[in-house]
Every structure is written in structure tokens, then in C-alpha cells.
Amino acid sequence: MGIGSFIKKQFIDVLQWNEDTDGVLAWRYPMADQEIQNGGVLVVRESQVAVFVNEGQVADVFGPGTHKLTTQTLPVLTNLKNWDKLFASPFKSDVYFFSTRVQTGRKWGTPQPITIRDKDFDMVRVRAFGMYSYRVTNAQAFFTEISGTREMYTRDEVEEQLRGILLATMANSLGASQVPFLDMAANQALMAQQVKGDLTTAFARYGIALDEFNVASVSLPEELQAALDERISAGMKGGMSADKLAGFTKYQVASAIPLAAQNEGGMAGIGAGLGAGLTVGQTIGQTLGATLAPQAAPAAAAPAAPAEDAIEARLEKLKGLLDKGLISATDYDSSKAELLKKLIG
Image: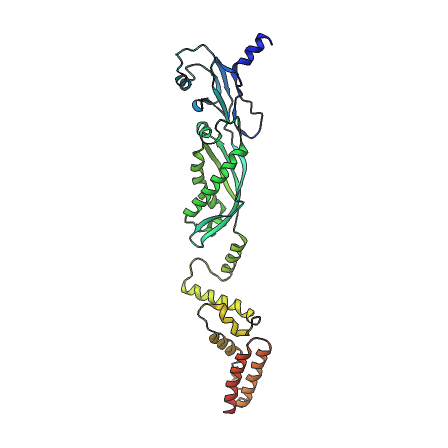
């Protein structure tokens, strides 16, 4: 090996990073057994930052430009090394380059629903998806909190950590916003606005700036969506006032009556499904009253039929209801006995 090759291997005159690998946010210059030449040149390209680290401690930070490495340009490292004002020998230091370019079009989502407090529904489990963009703005904080002394730290590794921060922040910010879920779901920009402020603060701790954040879609788990649909169908919204409770009770009755014929005991079985203060007798009485009540005769109509004929007609209608399964045998026998008592006297 020639003397020129030996010198080239041992001493570094120019330090730079070409960013030839896509998706890398932090890269350590490969020193091996080499040392940095006193008066050497550090080249930092646009959208880069270079950091000198001495024994794990961040020393000097350089922005874009060409920098000559001397005691004047390396004040912190000079102090840590206890160098004299002028040093003539090469020196050893770890040098890390960081990409500060905006990482655009990054996707985020909630693989599992997150639970948030809601003023309308108390607790809601939400799924959401969207896009965001970010960039490294504080290389020292990024090195200390995330990348550390690794040779290379990629965008995918960063986003693995950001995902947990994002979901936790979303749950906290939406829960504390006091904005009803229905309002946020109808206005995804509002939801994004609620989250972005808190997320910006959370990312800043790690030396990362949130550039953009949006919500593309938001949804509820299927079972909760089904319950919400039922509530909407009943005309319910928010808390139940007395009027709303009455409306919801009517909705339950209307939903339960078509199922009564399928239950053992016919109409008698409907009582178990109401649970809103309605009794079986009231329900049967209203139903039979609407069905069996004789129609009012017009003023010019024929004379009313004898009482016996009216009672026989009502008995026939009552038997028809029993045959169709709309009333139980017990209800039929009770009503039949009452009508026969009127007929016989």
C-alpha cells in the first residue's frame, strides 16, 4: 500500500452526505479508524443538518453551507476536548447528518378503534384514517430522543414511534375537546383541527415539526353504528327529555307489535318487550278498542242492528283475531266470556 493510500485512509479532509438512500432521516459518517483533519471541510447540503457528537454528547451543530473545521467553528467540541486555542493534529469525533426535507404523503390510521369520551354518547370507539407530513427541525432533540447512536435511522422506524404518539394524542385531544362526535364526523376538517394542535406539541418534543395533518375518513365499529342508526330512526338526539322518552317508547311499541304474533302467548307476550311503563292490559285494550269498536252510523243510516247482532259480530271478529295469532287463547276466552255475559244477561 502506498503512502498516499495510507494517508487517505487515515485522515478525512471532506465530510459530506449525498443522501443516496431514500427514506433515511439520520446517517452517521463512517469513521472506522479514520480521524478528521484539522482544517478539514464539512459540506452540509440544503435540507441537511450536521451534528458533532463527543462520547455520546451533542457538541456543535451545523446548518447548510461549507464549513472549515477549526477551534473557532467547533467551540463546544474544543471545550469538551480541552484543546488549546490552536490544535494541529487530527481529531476523533462522531459526525451525524440529518435530513430536514418534508416527508410528504405519509399515511396514518387506527388499526383498532380508539375510545374517546363524548358528550352525547358518553364513550365512543372510533376508527379514522388520513394523511400527514412532517420534517426534522431540531437535530439535537431528534438525536437525543429518537435516533441515538445508530448508524442509520429510517423514515419507517420514525413513523413506527410516531404512530403510537399520534393515536394517544388523538384520543386525548378529541376527548377533551367537548365537540360532539356527530359534529366532528360530519366535518372532518374540524376533527383534524382538534388533533393537529396537540399533535404539533407532542411531535416537537422529539425535534419533529408537523407540516400537514388531515382526516380522510372516520367511522364507528359496526355494532355501535347499528345502535346509532336505531337511535336516529327513533328520532332521538342527545339526552332523553320527557317528550323524547315518550317518542322513543312509541317507537319501541311499534317495533315490538309485529313480533308479538311470533311469541308464545301472542299479544300477551309483548309486555316483556316494552319496559316503558305500558301494561299488557293497556296495550290489548287499545288494540282491541281500535279494531272492535263499531263505526259511527251516518245521520241518514238505517236503524242500528239489535244488540244481539252487534255482539255476535264482535265475537266473530274476536275469533278472527285469535285465528290470525294476534291475541292469545287466554285473551280470547276472557273477552268472549264478557261478551256472552252481555248477550245472555
